[in-house]
Length: 386
Image (cartoon, rainbow, N blue to C red; front, side, top):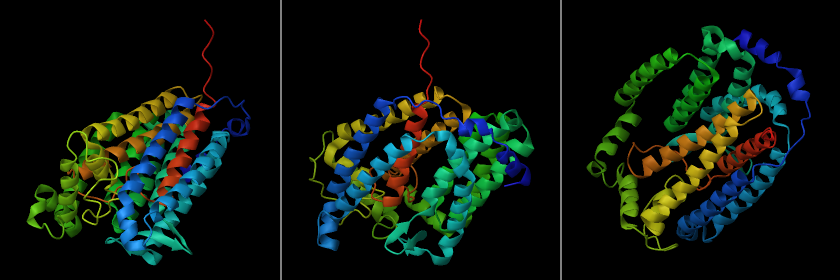
């Protein structure tokens, strides 16, 4: 980040941060949708994981219990965060961003390999995925910076340079892992906030051209990406190795039919489909609940996303609106990309389904983000009496 950006951040309106605005009720529809999605996700994660947990851990409830405890703690944390005046979160934005960058730098040094990628750091019994923290940090820091720069967002010095430096640094650190999907999410969410923040559309036209150029270079020069593109086109060219996972996923999706095999009756989860309770849990949803059930799950996500944007539009101030926009955009893009991977619409890459995939770090942060949305909803101005 440039020195001018840092100095501008220090000049945040102190009155906004100190203001103890009266907390109203939280947005109940959004809260109930979050609880519903979390509960459905936990049920499907248990159904997808119990065979693997039984075979590998000798305990069919191993993943379910861990995820359930984390989910309960996350919901409590969400409610606590919803009671905090979100203006104070400005103070955490830059320290959180710095911490996320430091953790990403440490990943290649002290991280451990899982599935051919080094994305996690282990601190005692706790495993942390810094990329999840980085997503939240980018949303908070960008929202704070944009709300400070305001009309200066149309200039290169304030509207492009500091944000580009942050995005390039974080995305570059993720590509080293490699975590292509995480880098894409960071860039898309950061770009969305910049667009909403007032950056001239011409910069985005240039960025899109540059993104296509970088994407073409990656797909034609990085062995990791080249293999995935080839398998995406025809997974049966290597059905026992690189193409195995997506083939099994398509078997699961296709065998579900219209109404599915029934909850708990998946065949692919019996150690045929890798990552069945993690990145590919949606394939088990399709197999057990069928096309109709999968559509209902997607409808729940759609309702949650729409309600989130409703809160963003009605937020009291620019900072709150931007934070909610970033959080909901991240949720929407990540959901779409996961479903697209599972159905082979795009090449396979490691990306989880929010609230459904097994993972403590991601679930806790996702629920914390929902707490931020609820905090913003508590300060939505009441409609004027007619």
